[in-house]
Amino acid sequence: MINITPRDRVLGALRGEKTDRIPVSCVTQLGLVETMDITGARWPEAHHDATKMAALGGALYRLAGLEAARIPFCLTVQAENFGCHVEFGTVDSTPGVRKAAFSTIEEVRYPDNFLGLNRIPIMLEATKILKRDHPELPIIVGMEGVFTLAGHLTGIENLLKWSIKSRDSISKILEITAHANIEYARALIDAGADVICVADPTASPELLSPRDFAFFIKPKLKEVSDSIRSKGALSALHICGNVTRIVKDMAETGFDGLSVEEKIDVAKARELIGSPRPALIGNVAAAKSMFTGKPEDVVLEAKRSLAAGVNILAPGCGMAPRTRLENVKALVSAVQG
Image (cartoon, rainbow, N blue to C red; front, side, top):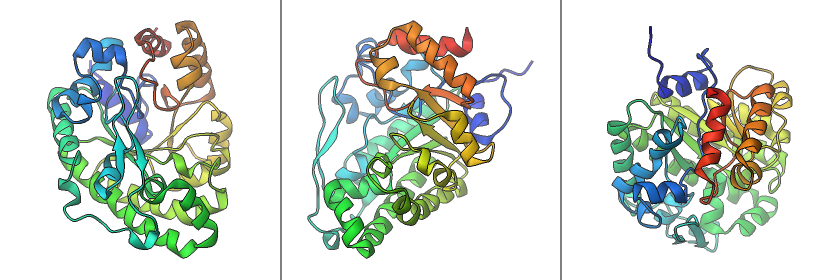
C-alpha cells in the first residue's frame, strides 16, 4: 500500500491530480499565539530567526494535523529591502509597512544585492530548515504580489491615484516589482520551496477596477507564475475580498491554485473559470469562523466549502494570531473525521 504524505496530497491537488481525499492546508498566514507558546518560537523574534521561523511555520501539522509548513507571517519582506519602514508588531500582531520608501514612481530603484538584504537570507535559511526537517509536508512560502509591493513602495493611495492619472508610470513600477517577485521566488525554490504563494490584496476589485486588473496586473502575475513553473515549483495566488469579477482573469494568470475568501461562491467561481484548473483553495472564513467561531461553526462552514467544490480546504485568508488551536483541529476534522 502506497503511503500518501500531506506533501503528495497538497501538491497533487495543485496539479489537478486525483487524491485519496481533499487536503486541508493553509497557503496564508498560520502563526498562532498558542503555537508560539508551545514551540517557544514567538513573534517578533521569529520574524528574524530562521530556526524559530521554521519551528513556528511547521508546527501546526504536529499540533493539529494541518497539511502545511508555511512561512513567513507577513507581507513585508520585499518591501523592507526597498527601504520601506516596517514595524514588526508584537506577539499577537503581524508586521506592517508604516512608511513608504519613495514619494514618486520615478524615485523607485531596484536595490543592489536584493537577495542579500535584511530578512531574505533568513527566509532562505528557514526554507532550507523546513525542507530538511519536514520532508512529509509541502513547503509553502508566501510573498507580497506585484501591485501590493508597489503600494508599499509608494503608498497605496498614491498608487491608486496614479492608476488613473499616470498609467504609464504604473507600468514602470510593476516592471520593477515583478522582477523582485521573480528573483525572490527563484531563490526560494532553490532553497527548497514547493509552493510559492503570491498574495496581492491591493489588487482586489474592492480597491482596483477589474479593467485595470486585467490591463496592469494580470500580465505581470503571469510573468511571475511562468517563472515559478520554469523552476519546477507550484504556485498559488491569493487576493482578498470578493474576487468574483476578476476570478477568470486570476485563473488566466497561470497560477496552479487560487486562494479565495468566504465572500466567493466557489461553485460560481468554477463556472466562471470554465475549467477544472486551477485548484480552488479556501474558503473558510478566517475571521468569523476560524477566529471568533466555535469548533462546530468551523466544521459546518468547512463542510459547505467542501460541498461547493474546493480542491484544498483552507482558511480563506491569513489566520488571526489569536485563532484557537481547537478551531484548526476542527478544520482538519472536516476532512479526516
